[in-house]
View (cartoon, rainbow, N blue to C red):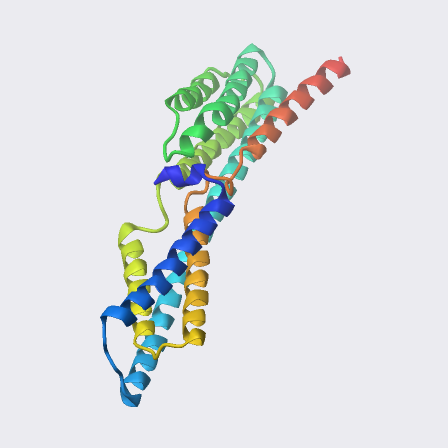
Length: 266
């Protein structure tokens, strides 16, 4: 299903809306041609009432799905931002701590951030994660474990370093979890599609008129837009509407700025 995220968003939107509108109107015309059901006034009223009930239930399902994918997208964005923020704080703490071992740990953080951008992000766009990045993240812990405080100041700094390192681990886990899972399970997708089909069939029981067919087409187009929104937002790191690694890039730029200011200060 990830191939759909390689297509421009506007084209995906057009395809989904076109397919639903064509299916709705085409199905309506086939129904009128091959199914000769003549409904009396009472049956028409019943069909209209059922249509209102099913449409309301479908609207609730679509609203629930839209909120779910939006919350998942926001959580993925927050996880990436938190990881970038904490990594920026960690490299500053290591720089203030000083010493060759702290410098080595700082370079491990830099290498990890670079790998997140170059390796992890493309892997997350396909619903996975990079083993290379995972190894580089473990290298941060190994480098931090070599730090030995010699003064009370360094002891306080070391506690901060471990706190930031563990916070990075939490944010990393949340970021990868958002890439691996879908907010919309297959059962919900099946329910949505079946609900759309039932809705269309109830429309078909209404007397034919150009106005009714126009309303059916507009209704199908609106359903298509909602489904497009759900699909696009369901994979936070894939497609053109995605969580970008710009926060990580900003962390690298901030690190470089700190280094240049330190050298200038000397």
